[in-house]
Each structure stands twice: as structure tokens, then as C-alpha cells.
Length: 132
Image (cartoon, rainbow, N blue to C red):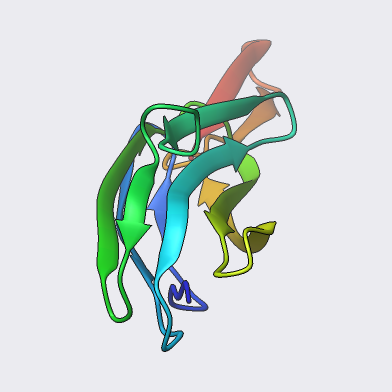
């Protein structure tokens, strides 16, 4: 089970996106080789933020109701839609390797916006530039 809120609120370029991710075994059985991979995808790139699913770093035994908690931080360098991708990998009681993914979209906005207007002044052939 993975859960995050549907809305992250206002997020701006230059901020650090930080979230707490909790992976919980809600099954009544013990799982094995449990790992969590967290990535962020933008229009320009895809970056791995955390990966405990690789050999050697997975949790060997994951009891019922046990949790795997991570705090993820990512410096926001791009404006636009970002997708947080959380993948859980595990081996079930029959020895079958399984995984599931959850996607969480959020918008990164520009904190500053500038607009300019030019006005020609007819008296002295001067130009006035107005910036908001």
C-alpha cells in the first residue's frame, strides 16, 4: 500500500520537493526481498531518487504490518508537470517476484513573472517601458 495526497499545494521552481513515503505490508503473510524505488520524471529527464530494490539492499524478510519509510528530497529545476513514480518490488509466499507502481503528478510553477509594455511619447520622441 502506497498513499500520497491528491494535491501537493503550490510548488515553485527553486524549492526543494520533500515527501515522506511509507510502504506497508497490509497482507497477512510475510513477504521477502522487498524494495522501494522512487523516481521523478519531468518533460526533460527521469531521475532515480532512491532505490532499495537492487540486489543486496532489499529487505530480506518483511512481516505483516511492517513498514518501510523514506524521506525523499528533490531540488526543483524545471517548470511544468512532474511525476513522482513509486515502485514496490517483493517476492510473495510462493516465491513469485511481483511489483506495483503508483504515479503522483504535480505542477511546478514559476515564482516570478515579468511583463513589459512600451509606450511611445509623442512630444520628445521618447519611449516609456512599463514592467510588471
